[in-house]
Image (cartoon, rainbow, N blue to C red):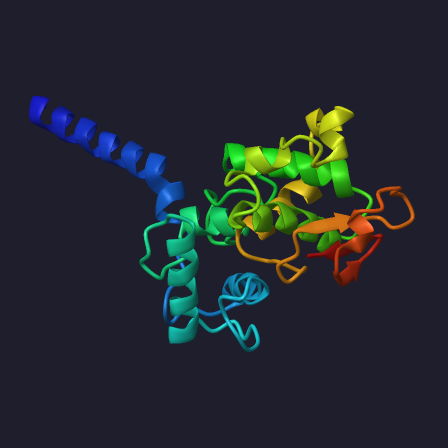
Length: 224
């Protein structure tokens, strides 16, 4: 009876462990050979960010794998060419087969939080593409030798953004601003490398008007 009792206890313990691990076991992982809507969502992100060319066909082939590897390397992830919970979270997509992928409106770092606040303060009335473009300008400045080399340094550079001087940088960003900042961090630059933006109907700054405008998105002119 004692042996039977110990065996039953062990069986129950194993069953309990299996239940506790079930969400992880069911978590979706996309890799070569996968297909479906989750793959299509990932491909659409990669195409938008310039990692993948062509159309999102929902088939995870070698081209998609290489694009995922490039994304993972840029974002400091394990470059295995597979889209699991961590890579999906960084992309801002939720995989339908699992429960551990982060929401597309999740803050993933302090830089992401600050950039989201900048986008919300400066561009919350703009189109989604326009919000991504504002975030991209900040990142283009970080990459330029003419500006500070950190996101916080660029945003808090004296006189750079009116939202810092008027305090609106401290407002809580909404989900759209959070997603727009993440898209910019992941490589989407609708401005094509611009370092400045302004609303020509709202600014009295004559110097900014001397910059060469490359594109107009919503109410903002984007310039170099």
